[in-house]
Length: 150
Image (cartoon, rainbow, N blue to C red):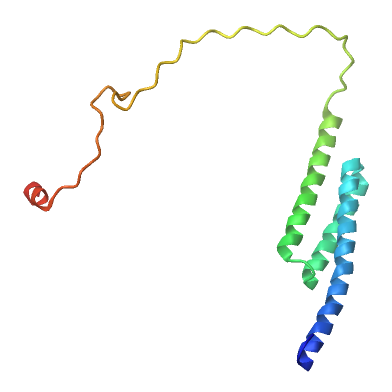
């Protein structure tokens, strides 16, 4: 337990905030879950309103300090992306011409691939691929060699 009056008060305050934050976080999870299910159900108007409401609540929670603003932004971004994917899929479905049910036919035969030459064996360490002499490690010049070369 706390040893000072100020520590006791800080403990009481943190308990009150924890309870309040807990209810806000629970409500946030509900709004986000509702938005995801409406997006998955592909009802455009409901999905847009539920995503808008969830983003509003996320912004409010971030402004009050219940969640971090980056977390709010990340969650909003993911919701908006899911909504955009759903709207794009619906738009493509509307613009695509209706495909008539064609009688099923046998699948087309595949063309044979032309044969390629067998792979060449890999070059060994003693016999490099370039055909030149094998490369050795570089050696540092001694001080006498360095002065002579300069």
